[in-house]
Image 1 (cartoon, rainbow, N blue to C red):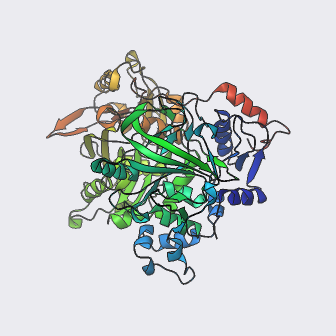
Image 2: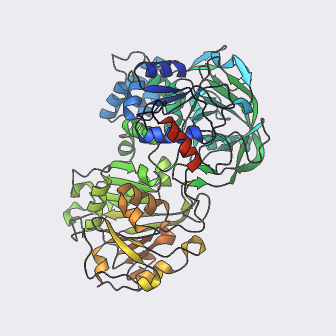
Image 3: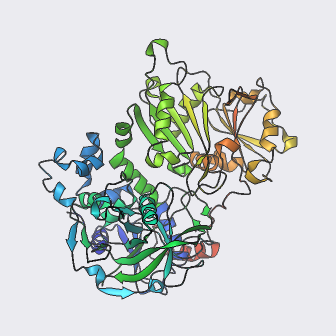
Length: 616
């Protein structure tokens, strides 16, 4: 049976030495986040902060920091959910048609998926204020304190009730900015999120949208809040299945339900026709998301249970703790996309590239098999279907390969996947752009908030080239234009250090002049992919660095260039190398950098006799 409360989970992890307590005073402003990042990088235990400066509530982080710990926390339910995965069953089908998927060993599965209505609950034991909550700030330029593991609950105004409710993880700014202290918080929800559907319905009805924010409670509720459930499917039902116990919800007349076992609950509503600047916030692409107008929640009450613990996490350049969420989501829902889009064999949103900027996919290439696979056909149909499916629609670079070319190809082996693609790609035909479209809210490489472009790179057939792994002595660069220090990053991929970008939106012309310096006969074209960066040593140092720099700092329509490029019948391609301008542009958000003074304070905790000795 799963944990009923967060404290049950904390005490159990401590009993198996998967949690350590820090009794020394820790500042929730930057210091706690720095500890979390360092412990996560070391694959360390969960951290219980017993003495939080300026706050009477203890905090806990890194609960989900390793897959082994995640699997331990959900040890009573993952086997059953993994069985559904092996059978290629969409977990949503369990909720729609549970009798078709019940196992005789899990006769209570249908029962677990039904939330339980109650009238009294531990979370209602006490009331407090926003200012009394832990004021966690993760990065030096964050605009205030944030709730980083919130469970934001709304219901469809057109069909109230659990069935079409939404439980999502949307960041909550509880201090700073222009918010009325103690009464208002910011709700930052990105495009293609369930709360947006409810908010839009409330606006159409001329009503305010009731919102409750839960913090803590059963770990299954936290995971359910990040699970990409199909629209109209209840995360509460999934939380019941994952936690192997019914989710208890306080249901009082005229009030939005509250998670009974949560540690904290903020109740209120989104103020109609009111937006306020939210941010900046150090986000999971590794940059600050900047100030933008977002909805405002009017907080009416703040509840907490007697033994409340404040859970938090930190996001930043991957990997971070949220990487573990992504791995668990893939483990549970991996077969869903192939089932929803026949012909798609596998997809992988690459965490090191910030998730949405880069998606790798494998599909079937079955059109006209009698002609042979000389050019992508079905792959393009599948690519369009992928870009129209759920949150995959936010993909910026989609690379898709034909399963028939290599049945053993693995989308999770990123280096091998890129090698396979670059051996076969033909830049004259295999680039397919979508311009003036939507991209991830957190991606600032495009034209503006939520605005940018996409490109599909589809390749099939036999290899066309042997990829170089060392520099050819004949290779030269236009150093007079500021290009230098070529480095071979991966087979067939060359990174080149370019001049600092000096124009808005990357239109300084430097990379165009770089491409114009070459003809298709020059040695540089042995490398099918050339990436221009600010620091070629850094970009070539690791696969992670290369992926992060290349795909978070470029917009396809603006930053993809080519040697001996052409445009024919509105199709763009090139005869020589594809060149991506991945330099930092003036309109990009700044990257995240830790505070050195805080880092030195954390170093002290790792010294001999300190609570983090031997951990970091």
